[in-house]
Length: 107
Image (cartoon, rainbow, N blue to C red; front, side):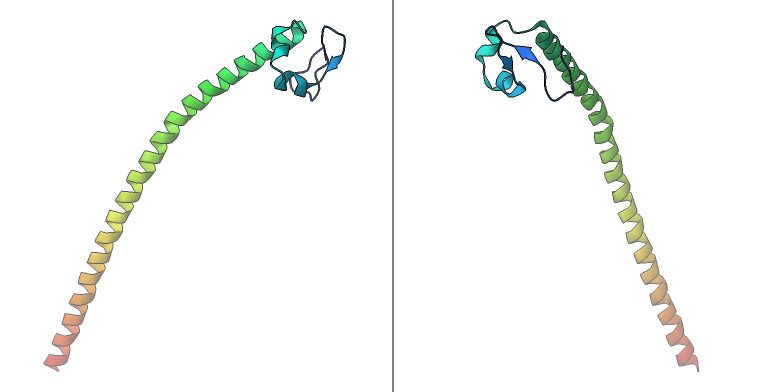
């Protein structure tokens, strides 16, 4: 019996000793021995899952990069508009000042 997401996977070596998950990942020589069919099935399923996750990440990364570029473009456009508004408000304020001066001079 084996559990993909469980903490412990009961595997048995050729001597009959129960192996822990740490033993499997730390000792390279255990890969050469025939341990348990379930372990190899588990490894195959794990590798398939990792490949699927990589594919999904690649698919998700492309639209994300495009979205980031679009956001940068929008930010640039927003800054341009803000600058135009500031320039227009400065001109308006200057024209108001000129009008006030003209009114004062006329009085």
